[in-house]
Amino acid sequence: MKKIIKYLILIVLVPLIVSCRDTDIYNGNDPELHSVALESIVGSRSDWMNEVLRMEEDSYGRVLFAFFGANLYWTVNGQEDVLAIVIAQKADSDFTYYYDSNNVIAIYVDQLNEKLTLNLLESYFDEEDIEELKVKNDWNKPINDKLLFRTEVTRKKMCNVNDRDLLPYKDLLGGNLYHRIQCYGKDRNGYMLVSVESELSNQSSRTFVIYLLIVNKDHELISFDAVMRVTDIFDMEAIKRFKQENGWSFEKQYD
Image (tube, rainbow, N blue to C red; front, top):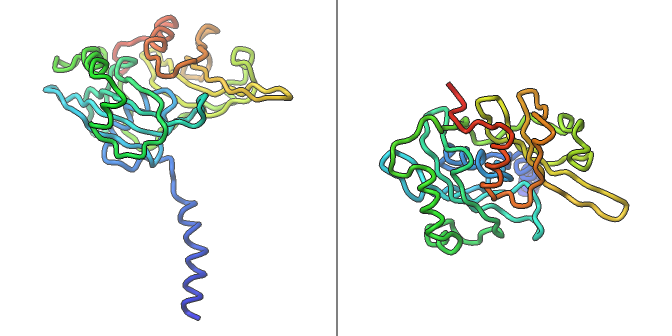
């Protein structure tokens, strides 16, 4: 009888424990690097499955690292994950710092069935691209404080922009249902980069389109030009141009 009772208790408690687990929290050992990745890679999200691998450190304390993680947005191939190489400039107990729009190269991958290792990364990224990334981030040169952006060290990224904030712009976004909204860095003007998936529907089909927007501190679009339909969320040069054309400041965004 005792065995039966114990078995019944397990049947009840195990699903409750699993359901209470917060899968949106990174549980690895490098939250400061994880925070930079989430700030820098459009579509990346907090998740228990995310991995960070330290690859190299320069003489000024910069860290070159690999990030494998969950992706918010569906691709033409379905649900794919994100694999990236990222550079963080420095970190302290509260904040981690990076060069905005210059610190990442990324691709889509199917879920990795192997452990994230340096050898595995060689099959996905060219050495020339990694060296170019280093050059853009002043590798082994003094850190340029004027270019530093910062984000809070966290294991769970929050975004306080919601679908109601976007409803006034439904004509620009092509729909009236918005999913998986994510926030990224803020510049000196208080402008914030936001990604959103817009659902375009008719009687026969549903199409999902990703947009980037630049909004102010009140979550209002800074202009009608500050909307970009995204065809490649890893095209950092296109994202940088979009920011430049809309008055984004790439200088240190904090005093």
